Image (cartoon, rainbow, N blue to C red; front, side, top):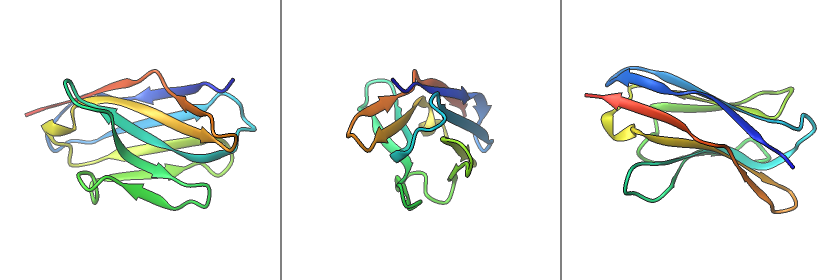
Length: 116
């Protein structure tokens, strides 16, 4: 069983920056997609950014140019650098990873709150 351990998040003013990290508990885990989703109150969970097994990165239109997803070269970890944050970025952010078996894993979620 793979666990996704998240860190980062918190409270920031609009225009500020925050970083999120997510590491898989199994150091030998090789993903077939890893990244971040978010869910705001009363809304569905939505994709924020994801990196594929061949390191192709996809971003939601709403975060393009502001968020940067990166992957560690030595361990199964992704980082999300969030810049120019807006109040509408407020949500619980969930780390996501898909195994080659097709099984999907989720982190416990970390709160990001952007004040206006």
